[in-house]
Image 1 (cartoon, rainbow, N blue to C red):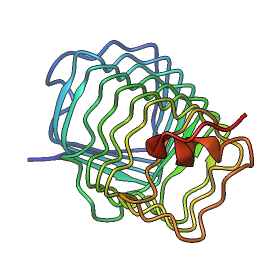
Image 2: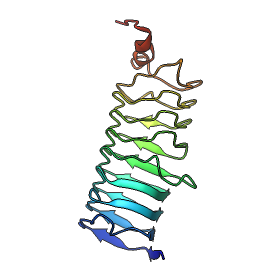
Image 3: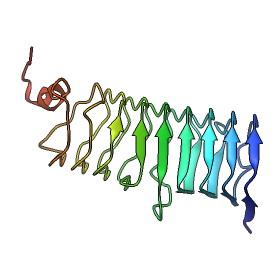
Length: 189
């Protein structure tokens, strides 16, 4: 049995391991909440906003994110690969997603702005058309990803192998183009 909650604000709550399972939140706001101990299962967020929340190392399994906005949140080492893909839409602004796993996800409806994406696993993901605006992509992995028409022009520290990633019509800055050549052991000065 699922519990439905509409238009409620939660502030400074530390959630326990399975406290939110089988809940559906719609148009809710979470501020300064800590989800790091959670093992999510059968959970839905629709049109929700999260500000200054901590999800680091949370287990996110069978969660539905439908038009969800994250501002200044942390997701270190979170595996999003088991999220429900139907109407999957997340927006990250000023977030830390270091070492997160987005393996094989369809992220076309997602946005990343001014966020740290260090060593994020985008392997086999569909990131086509996404703007990675002002993001740090140091050691982010894009092998076998579809990054066609994606905009990397304001991001830094990416290395993408054009032989293993679809990058047709993707946008890169002249400075960032070095990240496309590193796999070929070419030095640009």
